[in-house]
Length: 318
Image (cartoon, rainbow, N blue to C red; front, top):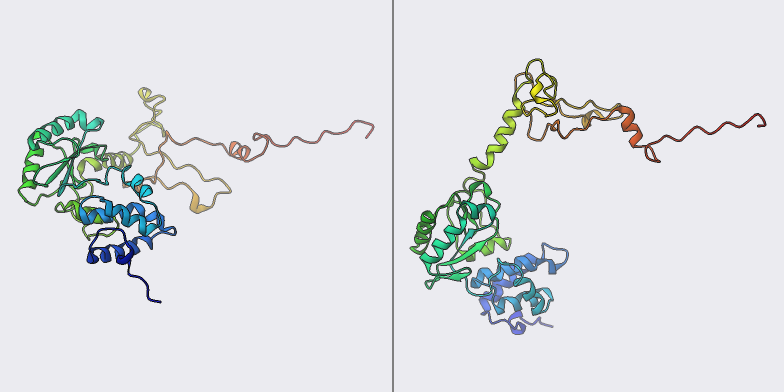
């Protein structure tokens, strides 16, 4: 018996070529999961990459592919804000207005862009170039205020720099994010990447900037400093530091227990030449709890750590 072509039974309005390409990609998505229904999220990004939003046809396609009802698919598509239920612009310009970015100027940036583009939240310019959004935290607080274009970072923005960015996007110019890819792709192309089909650009550009790495550099520098002369591991030689662990002291390694294998012992402190240990190799003295051998043994005993009492000796009659 000859299998019936999918197009003959699909209730979508896709043309044959589009349906064939979508179906092939959907099979690759379903193959990633033990339960095919788990592929719904990337499949919604897939159909969005075709039309620029999750249309009725996209909803029906996902339902047919995964054995779901259209209502079940719609419930997911309307829950997550990255799925658009109406045509989106070529570029989504998202202004972070969460707490830190708002305090640093995010609200002013959004207001200026809204006035400049004559659109509000989740509205698209008449030329179809930009959809403006207020977005929640982008995990880039060290560069606040942040604007994202199709989820690429534009750091330390101002109302003036943001409006210039929007004008360049509408003019069709290539723009380079502060970090990440060398240029910004289209909304449809970005949706396909989110569906799990890499575009080969993941390693372009700078991943972490100076503001992100500042804390790491400070931690490594502090770990490399030798103990002050005459002071103990917690700065006991300085009266002003009583009760406060010194941030400039490399905490000593905890001694290994007698029953502890050699490879489980605490890592060695910084070498004599001041070289910093590997990040995470040292535990803060504020985090370490001194444990006496007898305490450690008691913790492993039943009945609240108390050893079983000696059996009572009988009287003279025994």
